[in-house]
Length: 398
Image (cartoon, rainbow, N blue to C red; front, side):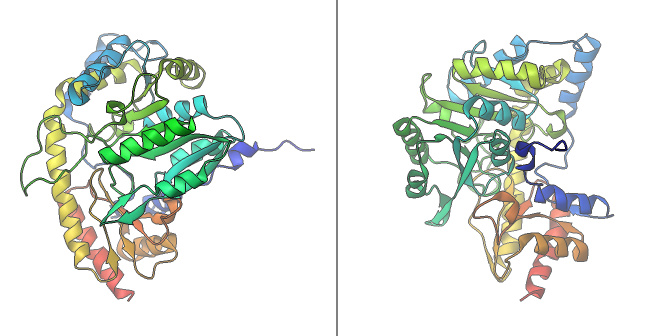
């Protein structure tokens, strides 16, 4: 018998977002709205902090859980932003990105054959990590009710079996923009407690949140989407994955963190040792600076993103055959387009004919087909051109 690739590796599907992006990367002049990142560079004050850290000798190994100063900065962040007290020495683990936080967190919770409920449409990496653990994914789509997405609580109750170990959700959602309300958080936490399972929240977009404010009004200081940590006790089976990528324009830095109960945080620290050792020390110092001085920049970003959202929605509102609830957070639109049954083919044709790159809804799991994801974190001039071309393309197909 010849050597074979492990089944756990074969279980992981190829990313349809990346598949489309690789085509776009071979082309010139593409309006790149397929990845989840701003086209703005990392702010200079963060880059200068990293340069200073390297000059000061922050180029060596650090603690597996992250430098104590970084964990203290994160604990201070939760205290100031959410009014939640976290023990930096036992309940925070610094990781190489938000996806790495998901990775070590999920691997702490699942054994082969276990089941995980994942609320979808969702960024595909969460489901893929569950599959990498040789566990079973049960995707439960959000439902539209009263003009907004919500959780299908009847469906998640029906999905529970003796092998169910966790429920994973993202709030604010990538790609829906859905943000868990206080009532939804209460019900999710009650669900996890009643069934004795883990509740894992991906909260990487929490600072990119758009409550109903008058047009042009600046968001209040320390604005954030509500965190499940505000509701949970220190004994609850709750884990939060987070990242510096979105709010601080640090996607390429690969820096994130995990907040978890002490027993899980200890095991996640051990997994860090054998997977990544630790996040780079100079990047951690840059992250500390982002937390300390980044509030004004975050507020400016929220203003810009809200304007971008409203602009893109105004274009789609005038486009026949498009249905789109108003996103409450993150920086994506996820319109459902009448007549689209193969969203990858739709997006590929759009790319080849108009040079507009967006992500196919099928990439985001159950409930995603028939929709597309548009990242509106780009500059307004780029969005204006791309949305005009998208509108014409959709209407030409009718």
